[in-house]
Image (cartoon, rainbow, N blue to C red; front, side, top):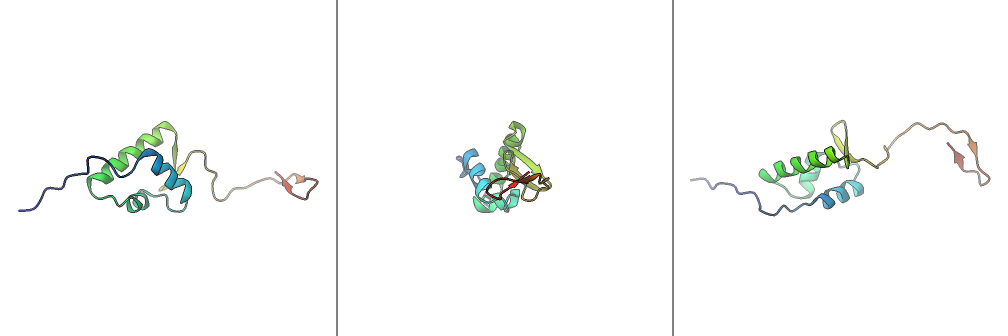
Length: 93
C-alpha cells in the first residue's frame, strides 16, 4: 500500500524569504527555480504557487514572460537617452 503524501504543516518558505531570494537571484526567478531553492515537493509547490499569486496581486511581484521579478526591480537591459555629461564625466540620461 502506498503512503499518502502529507504536505508540511508549516511551509519552509515565507513571503519575505521568497522576496529576498528573488532580490539576490534575479536570473533564477521562475517558479521551478524558487521551488528547487526551497526544496519543495508536491503540495508545497501548490502553496508556493498560491503565495506567488498573492504577491503578484498585491503588486510586490511582476511577471516578465515566465519569470517573476520584484516590482521595484529594474530590468537587466534598458534603453536610455544620454543627454550629456556631468562635471565628473559621468553620463546624464
